[in-house]
Image (cartoon, rainbow, N blue to C red):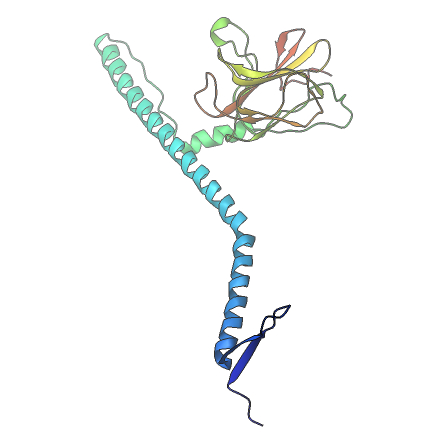
Length: 258
């Protein structure tokens, strides 16, 4: 027997209402069924990938802002380089007029600068298993150390180390302790966290973009306490890290607890 070209869909309501039937061509019925299936699959795929699309869009927006910020820094660096070259020319002419023989060293190229950074080494967040968890060890973030500890005189006073890193990098507590300060320091350090590890030792983490802890909270060693940034008196994204013993700054790069 030949297959019918039509399909009848019957609607049978409860109660005394009469039945209703809808007759349509078989190909149209198949088209509607497969169309509905395609729509349902499309909706499921949309919601499955929607989160990824939003994440990528947010990441693209952040990358665009970072790129704009880097372009501004590059423009400032070029201006400083041009001003330095002009100042060198003026000083050279003045020394020639004064009969002074002086030769200024040439500015290093990019490859030389990056090679010098590599020689300085990277800050490494590491901690030996045998060290007391209340003693600060290692460094709180990974990045290049751009300024060392120096307290020889007031002109070069820098009671910690500066670690260059991308904004938003997690800052880790270098030892277990209590948060005694977590707020904005308008004088120097911007968003700053200070941890007290025992009666004599504290650590300071400055120039953050966001604080993840509050004063009075106990934090374990290695826990996230902030996100690095460029707040306070800062010319580029980095973290300022200090260790103080009896309120006296010590070099975080020294094995001071041995």
